[in-house]
Length: 233
Image 1 (cartoon, rainbow, N blue to C red):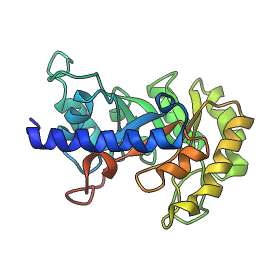
Image 2 (cartoon, rainbow, N blue to C red):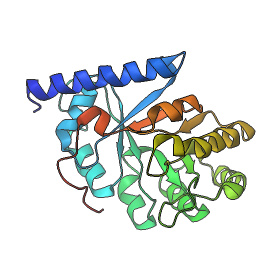
Image 3 (tube, one colour):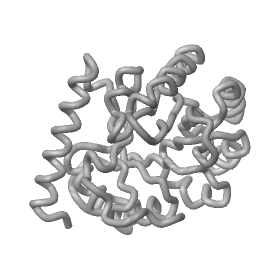
Image 4 (tube, helix red, strand yellow):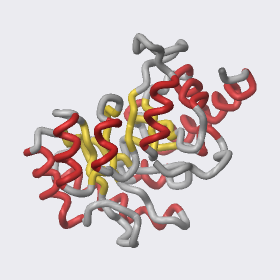
């Protein structure tokens, strides 16, 4: 269980996050906060749920599956009070991981190739997905090149998936460096009539919101520094 000190620290951080969002957009309620618990224990999920944050994001398959099990009992019920978690998978989609993730994940963020959609559609027909846009062009950053996004969105929809929007990870460095990429994602989402734009993390939150983000993915801003590097899935 989370001790009172940890819960109070989380509440203060959440208030600070909401203040940042409120200063950046006219309607703070329109912005969905995904609490990213990568590298933290299951107690982080509990703190978020107790504070009313249902959306929980994980980058690693093993962590997501373990934490989902930790907050549910044998009957499939949450083991503590709080809103039921809505799990977002934020990592690169590896087809050999989909079978384990599919019973738990409700939002698949980060699709970049049609074959990833095929694997998800086979295990979770009608799943909600976001297409990750490569806004940096840097090796290893992941995502679909912007020019290929319309075709990928169409292919995923043809597979029976619900393509709710686009997702992007800004480049490292000053937050303003992320602005052109975030603006491009919003332009693409508008053109494709996609409502969700998952953009912005702890450091570039305000830039993302000013460019039309509707969903932010926050770890350090909510939970503080990670105690250790996230392990691989």
